[in-house]
Image 1: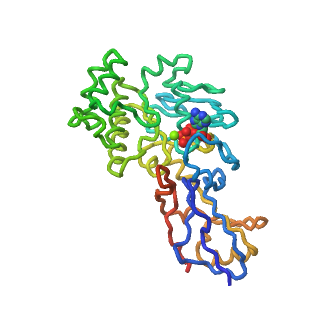
Image 2: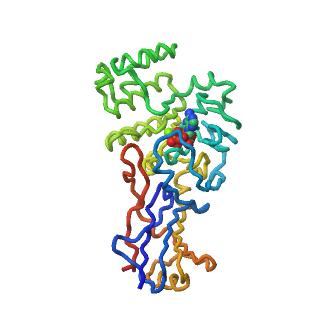
Image 3: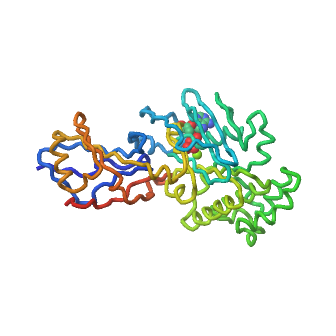
Length: 376
Ligand SMILES: Nc1ncnc2c1ncn2[C@@H]1O[C@H](COP(=O)(O)OP(=O)(O)O)[C@@H](O)[C@H]1O
Ligand SMILES: [Mg+2]
């Protein structure tokens, strides 16, 4: 008797919005002569995406992409122009580094007044997209606008209404938080100086404003970064991985702050590789991989429509199907006879968690092991 376990393949980031539920440890489906080979493909309703753990494990930036098949593009879920218009709009936006297409014909629509997540694994092109939007690097092709203002043609006018943190906020460590903001306000001019105190208070740093930044925690530096953004009273904040390096309490504070900025009528676009955080913080999301936006829209629409494909390659698909039926997990499944694949629905997907997956900064989305009824 051979046994199969779901899954045998280590889960990866690609499980994000549609995570197949593997059997709990020790739970097995005995299916007679089935040989083995189990692939689990997490997918959204638009189609399956291949696992590519190698790319995940690559970690450091600035490397050529792995030759894994690129995911399919997909139209935005919701393309109706919101009342306030788009805070960020791009069409066919492309940025290459040599032959590496870091931003690949991105169609991005960020509704004004939303918390919008640009979600994808490390190396997916999030920072490059942001840098391109801000005019820090030049696009190869495509068009873009910020708050309805075309960039790079009118970059100065647009950026006067935008606050951004790219990569990590950088401050002079030997100066205090307040002194750092003074320097930045001097560069900004106009009313920025009068916003220093309210901005520090706004991010909860009023008490520590006189301390050197060198003594700040990562969370405090991130918050000081947001305070720096607020000096310009921006309508749009663009934050690159604002949760990076934060402990759970820091993440919680950042989440609350982002939500309150949105409640004030601002738009916050953030990039992240943490599905959980984006789900908790944002109203809408674009999922990016290999530079391409593969899905975007309101979070509730995306999760409502999400499906899961569990692909079981086996010698006797008909018999495997019977066993799965008998195990009571077949509801909503379809069998594609020719491939011997069994599609299982989202009923099996109960939990997701974010797990450490890299010794340093990288984290991955993994399914929580669940115990499908009837298996054992
Ligand atoms: N300045 C650069 N020169 C060459 N390649 C780069 C540069 N910046 C980014 N890349 C490459 O572009 C791709 C996307 O990188 P990045 O935008 O940093 O991804 P993310 O922010 O999603 O982790 C990666 O393959 C990375 O190696
Ligand atoms: Mg990045």
